[in-house]
Image 1 (spheres, one colour):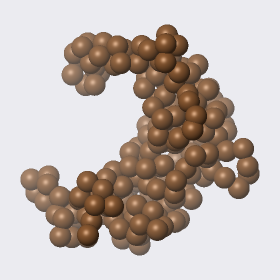
Image 2 (tube, helix red, strand yellow):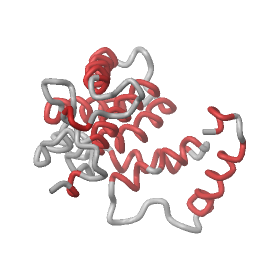
Image 3 (cartoon, one colour):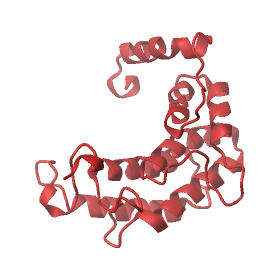
Image 4 (tube, helix red, strand yellow):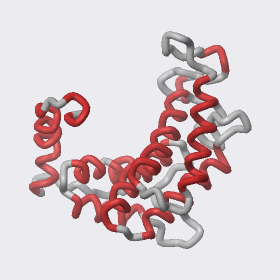
Length: 195
């Protein structure tokens, strides 16, 4: 936010909020491990505390060859949660394991969750094109494209997935920027809140 607004107060606020984790007053990694809490280490990374972020990223990396990342739930949320941290660590470390995990995570989820029209369903067992779920998918794709280098082998494929997704979302947006809920995306706050 500071880079966008040129207001240092946003960086100061972030520093204050993560200080207990940086100082060790509060542990930043606790059991039970969850992708959502581990992904929060992207904030530490962005504030320059990369060692803790890399530890969390290493915990996310799959230990079994059949997995893409650990602690995933099979939701579009995972596309953002895993990629946000792994892409940052990959950009600094030049360790190919992170980029490979991102590629496998995104492409696996695209194969399972992206509809023919370009929208994403929230999960295999939640086959609705939920607005926030599409936001998580979009952010995951953006994080990969933002932080991984132009020479990343999967960049062309991820860029095409992203473009297809943006074309699909644009069809559901009115001229004033508001979504057209009647056109196939549920914009309620949670897929579980629908009747």
